[in-house]
Image (cartoon, one colour):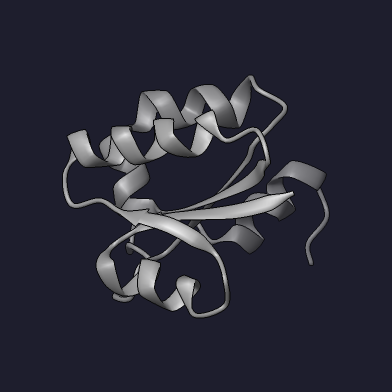
Length: 101
């Protein structure tokens, strides 16, 4: 199983240094093309996507988050950190399992 990253140039470069392939995306069109490229490779089991880029193509990302088995979609904050209005991963896990971690 392989990983694939979709993010800004720095994210793709950084993940590339540890051997993870990826594509940069700066607009919705590039984001959609990168996502489709990742989906075409059946060896990719985990797509790491920056949250701001995922927001550009939210309906497509949500289809895979909520209805498909693979690949697993992992949204990560960009270099600037998480958006103030976005819940933390810890908060989402707490809500999902009903236990405070």
